[in-house]
Length: 176
Image 1 (tube, rainbow, N blue to C red):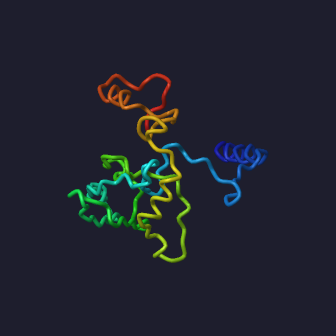
Image 2: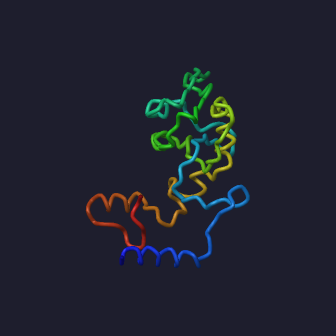
Image 3: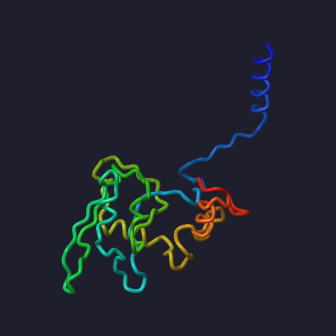
């Protein structure tokens, strides 16, 4: 009997609280600072060239093999990125490709509205990914790494201190 009264009390309390509804297309939610959306390519703002050095680490580490790279030999004897394809329908948005990139050419964007009517619309090429990545601030403008400007993100020194057993840094939240 007491359990039913407690259940009704919860219902009555919620009855008089205002509804919290977000009207999605007109009003969008604030995304968490660590949100990982669609992987995108960065370009050098001075030259406009892609930062990718065509090492292929991102394609090798991808657990779903959603990244495909076609590497061309350049005039200097190095490699050059010919074609870069992302199959977003396969992507888990894990961020491993961005973590392994030695020159920070790949970043996880804030894009989450990826719905299409045809499966072919989920295949992104190098130019499309560069256009998405061009909207993002570069790491050298925001500070060190992807955690710059995020209030609850730890720095690398704080991560090392936490792993060494010295606990969480004061004034910050534990990473999720």
